[in-house]
Length: 224
Image (cartoon, rainbow, N blue to C red; front, side, top):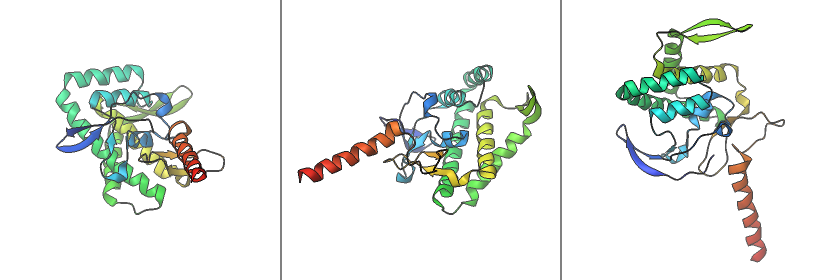
């Protein structure tokens, strides 16, 4: 989890903590686009999570970095946001709500908890909408799904996130789905390490913090 400085904002009538953050490719540690989307917030279990997406434009930039839109597509999305900022803001509110459902869903899988049917229904709603606006086509020597011309530009990032979430739930590996053990982090990731015992979202941040705390604890015991 990246280091954060938070401020309080009111969004869609809800008080939440917001932390501006310059995303880079190295922050995409989830192993799945849906998990990376969930990881745009942290400290979920506190009941007052920290959100690092400040609005539709920031979401579009993050989505492009996460590989959910190519460069021309990302440009068209940003233009659509400028043309209709009110619609973009309404969609962003839906994105934040969807992110919460995905967190609860995947965190329950990671910790062996109960799945909330409403969270699954939220995912199904978006995957059905995505299917309505996609079609199979050639991509080089293979095939992939393309968005149709009728697809609402400012929604296609959420379509891609929904498809990634469904794919992870269907095909796993769910036994490798973990939550970071760092303080107030809880980022989710698919553990591709050899022994499947990775504890931290990143050794450079949460892992290093844990090592420092452990070292200070040992030094304190020695000094006692």
